[in-house]
Picture 1 (cartoon, helix red, strand yellow):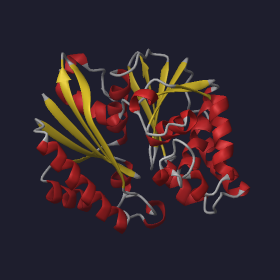
Picture 2: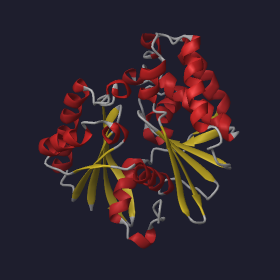
Picture 3: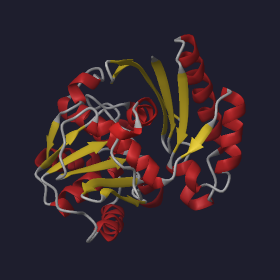
Length: 308
């Protein structure tokens, strides 16, 4: 069986194509387009006009790739930006017409569940593992208790925080302080104790690539990489000192992420402080992978979704 998932996110639109072999999914194709659908959303309440155009083009292209590879099914899922925007449902219908496929706008708990599936099906975890999914518009915390999966969602996405707080290039000290205050206000008293932290999302994978100074992005070198807190702090200070054009030239940096990475790493830094953690493990298995496992595996083989 060959299957595909397309994630319409706040900052990027992504594609994953995988094949089922012996009950496991093996990645065969991955693609990404920086579409910034949620740019300005917190100010206007609507999706970016330019972001809509870019997203339609990306989804149409990714759907065509999935068809050329003769996928048995294709899922299109949408997260924070389309969930929150006034015009999200209308844009979902526009995407459906462009791609010829259904678009699912995921509730926060379902989004978190898919991310949990993606991590737990690709890394060794236990009940003392805290997973965080840091996207462009939101950050979800996920952990397991005896009564099932627990989730929390916060307005702490990298694009959202950049738009809301980091207006100068490079950011002013008072802007960084205001962003930190907002992050701490969200996280205070909400982070459960954990022995192990695992992070997913563009911020953490991009940060790992910068730390490793990868000349070309290689998922195999990112997945399972342990990122120490001291290295997070070191790179954060560097990112906050440089202008966007200078950040874009850093080894391992994807130029299109140079604008929003400082805000995302601020969230990672504050989360490690709140969890009193010495570092975290980076996972390439995330929402895309989880959205596919949720279809191919029988219910008895899946952890219980939130609320069940």
